[in-house]
Length: 103
Image (cartoon, rainbow, N blue to C red; front, side, top):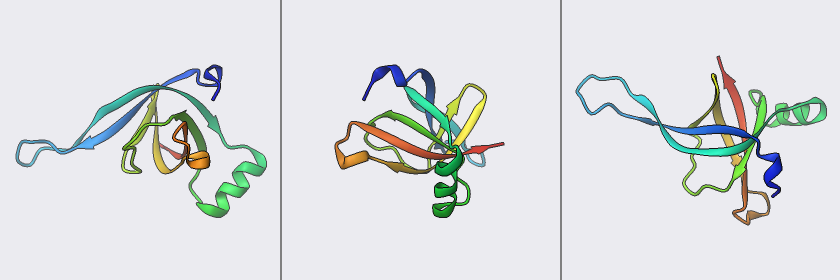
């Protein structure tokens, strides 16, 4: 993986329950990493639509153990829901996160 591709600073966040009774759950930072944030274009977008009608982008990061689809990615003011994670060639070098922007 070429480090030059990872030029965006993103936060991986985890939803944590509020310890007080009746409190609202809130998002907490799990990791802050360098990433490549890319909207899907043309043929990639059409292929992704066939797999999941909600995929709007791909975020590539270095491999992080324990990442779950219940987490989210925050990039500046944008929030992305993680729909799936792909570990190319199962080498634990990088993760490609298929995401949907949450408005």
